[in-house]
Amino acid sequence: MSEIILHNYPQSPIAERVRLGLGIKGLSWRWVEIPRLPPKPDLMPLTGGYRRTPVMQIGADIYCDSNCILRELERRFPDPTFFATGVNGAPWGLGRWTDGFLFDLAIRLVAITGRDTMPAEWVKDRSGLYFEPSYDLAAAAKDIPHIAAQLRGQMAWVDQQLTEQNFVLGDNPGLPDLFIYPMVWVTRARWDQGPALFSQFPALEAWEARVAAIGHGDHSDMEPGEALEIARASDPETPEGVAPGEPQELEPGMRVGRAARWSEQ
Image 1 (cartoon, helix red, strand yellow):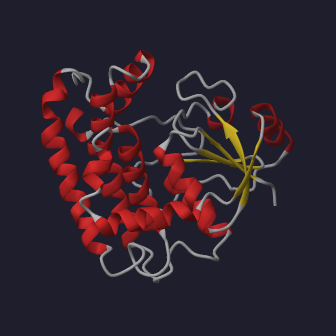
Image 2 (spheres, rainbow, N blue to C red):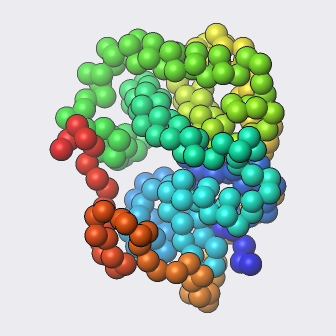
């Protein structure tokens, strides 16, 4: 089996999710650092234009989107599992909350409060990627207390879930921990009021330390050019196809893109 290669950058919360997943499974892997902003000339040839982070490469097989990556890691390396309690359907649904409403709250706090200290090109790029076109970060500063109150309510739920167990679903870490932790991680690191907010939740903070202690497995750096050469010299193992019953009549080779938010449609 070819090496696991993760194309990512250190500050990405979604890459942190996958890095922790690699840690749970105790895997060795290679780190290719990619730019935080387009263009990404050493990544785009692998992904066909997909620009988000992270991307996993195994030989010539390229896995975009963290959910896709975690599914493939579970398929290839089932032990230890991401589903130690045997609950393997509902956690994916939990990811719709963390990657939807919870991510939206966290990224708004980070972007609004950091708009004057972050690089202007980052603010412009992420504003277009995450928010509606008319969203004004400076004008939204007045909304910070309301956004923080909403986030506090979500964190109270998590804290309650963790009062009598080490991880979200029991004694062992799994998919729900990978979904929730990066939202805490990025908010604590990039919002100056994050530590004060989380200090209200002792069970959550204890869990946060346990998850961080899992680590990222054993990794070493790889240059982007080496990863490209590995892809060129390898044959894909993943068969082409579309899931049976797919309702959009997708076919291999079709161009796809980011769907608009429901609010933009």
